[in-house]
Image 1 (tube, rainbow, N blue to C red):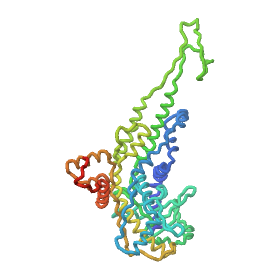
Image 2 (image 1 turned 180 degrees about the vertical axis):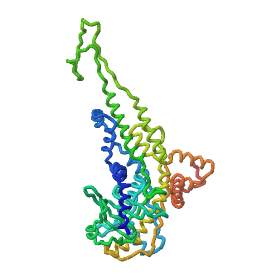
Image 3 (image 1 turned 90 degrees about the vertical axis):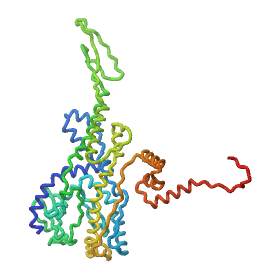
Image 4 (image 1 turned 180 degrees about the horizontal axis):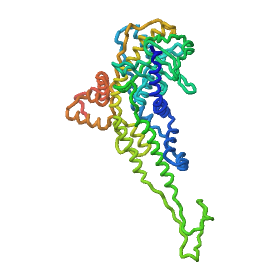
Length: 460
């Protein structure tokens, strides 16, 4: 059946290849640190060659994208609870092996970053020299689509871009039952399928060997965010503009009226003399025109744009006090962003996504790896074993002084207890932890007094 769907696969490829090579690749490339070339390209479009030559040494390639994505991608900063739904000592030991060997929290944190960067992510378990591993797919190297009419957000076809020819790409295409290698001209690459011992195109795993997590509830691949790439480029451009203004404000334009400028030298130690022309009723004059710009207003405008953009993305800006409108001020603002609301919205997607990942590993990939001898192991999980994933509560950023003031007022009015006050001050603290801390506090605050003779005079 997959062979008959090649025209459909190619149509999906043509529809998405511009996005893969465009915003998907650019966002990933910038996130990996390669911002400067994109800022240069944008400035080249806007100014003349001579202006660009002047600006280029002062371009400010400050990558705010990484800081913003890192702030959003913190749901795995504390390891979630993972509980087997079918209790079993053998399964628990095998589960612990996989959690450790896959370095699950580290890889899922990376998946969380790509998810926030592109609005979707794909995670692929695989075998590396006999050891299970996880691969977070590069966002410009794959695409997925669905032919499921009942649930079009459920992936039915997974396509990996595995190589390039002169004018075509090579695709590895998976469904739950089939596997095929084609090029984007529509040819089935039988030699490559024979080389891996699968000329019939069977998916021996019995399930697409990857988990797809999408942020959209309506589309399998969410619609492209046009603002994030634009704002990532515009912020360093605006700061580069300020650099250029500051540079030229340091140099006034020198002008002369009725001056013989042939012998004038522009140097710090130069001395100029002027003679009046007796035939003219004028005198020579030298002056300067100093360009001026309200840099503070421009900086405030940049801060306003960043603030407005973050607010539209559901990110609460909680920078304390008056933030300086500068590069360091913007960095501070980003550091103090409150992303709790957005992170709370991410949690359900990753609860389902990670549960699907464990289902794929436990019930499909692990049995296949054992049976095919790809891993040196014989034990299997219980049939239909599954994992419940529970994330820690996503807390926002509070002003610590304001929290303490509120607790103090509540204690003074008798509206709370020491235990509840400790739990409010230390978000995420359990009742047991609060009891233990309260016990230590009470022990340290207790003053021991030696026994004294009641008949002896004591100083007050």
